[in-house]
Structure formats: C-alpha cells, structure tokens
Length: 285
Image (cartoon, rainbow, N blue to C red; front, top):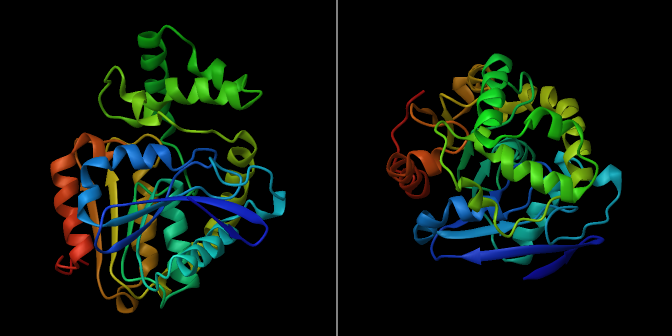
C-alpha cells in the first residue's frame, strides 16, 4: 500500500492484529523485506507496520540528498502514523533502525508506548574489526569468493544486491546455507547506503547526548557474537541513559546469536517480544 508524505510516495505493509508495532529496518540501503521475513514467526503477536524509508525499496527512489537523514526518517514515520490513525505505537527497530527508534523517542516522547532496539548500530565503533576480519576470511573460503574485493567493487544496485546476498552470512553466528533467502523480495539502494552512514556518524553524538530524555520502557537486545555491532555500543547506550530519567530499561544479551537473534534464538526472542508488547517485563536497570 502507498501514501504520500510531503513530496514522497511511501510504501507500507500491515500484517497481524493487536498492538500497533511501527518498525524501522536496517541499512541504510536495504528495505523492509528482510525485517518482514525474519519476523514472520511473530506476526501473530501484534499489528506490524513495515515500511520503506524515502529512497529505499518501493518508496520514492529519487529524493534529495539532504533528506537522507535520521531526522527526516523520524519525521516521515510520525506522519505515517498520522495517516494510519495510530497515536502511540510500539517502536521496533533493527540495526540502523534500532538507532532510529532512539531518535524517534527523543523527538516525540509522547508519541509512543515502548521501544525495542534490536542490535542497534550506533556508529561509535561500528565494527569488531578483528572478529569481522576473521569472519570475512572464513566466509570467503566457504563461498569461494573474496568478499572484501567484492565490497570494494560495488558500482551499482545490481552489484550491491549480489554482494548483500553473499555477505548476509556475516550477520549470523553459525553458517547456514540458504540463509540469504531472508533477503527475497528486497530492493537495494546504493546511494542511500553511502549517504546514510555519513549522516549516522554525524548524528550519533547528538542522540547519545539526549538519550537520557527517553522516559518510556526500553528494550535493547544484542547478540554476543555480533561482529557488525560491537558490544561497546550497547554499553555506551546503557551508560548514557541516566537511570533517574527512565522508567524501565532492559539490556538483554543473546549468547548464541550475532546480528539476528530473532532467527538464531527464536524461542527466547519470542518470550521477550511478548513481554515488550504486553508491557509485563519487570524493571531490570
């Protein structure tokens, strides 16, 4: 389905019934499909709203460079809620989307119920460099392709898609042939990928400086084997919160997961997701 927000046509998809859950996909450069596919087992737990940011997926592909920002994504998501007559959704963001949920909560403190930030990319130290290097080499041997060489030779969206499907294995603790099926249906945006990370690096310190203003229940989930998001990022978020300014914060590690706990530890993830949706989790910080 589509709606027009500002100058852009925005694609969205709604599945399930119950509490509205506004999602924020990762990337940038990816669209909502991988998040839709990796959360399918849980779509019966609430009303999930998946959507593509401007410049991504099936939303308007041609946008101003100045609009490829965290703030623009946040403002667009708030207007999308207005179009859908949703006043206070639950916020659910993965990877880069996990960072955006924090920005949303800061900008619109009275316009959401709770937030879940899953493996949030915080850009402070985005990669566990040694772990990522080892995983690059191991995966390159398994696939018979030099992934680092492929990443440096991306020239267009077609190259990006080929690389993304191969490199998707980097996001998982254990190698599973066919795991890239979670990217089925995805449309990639190379320009947004590059510009988006430049913007994220610029805005990260702003978000951390204001994160203590978040006043609703917050879940931060991460995989202990994640080589994309360093554990130091999660610790930094925790240290920046300010206990006196937050009702409840839950920092939850997944010991057998990397960047996709919803795939690698689905039972544990479902339990926590149910607590997030119902608001039944006891204070842990």
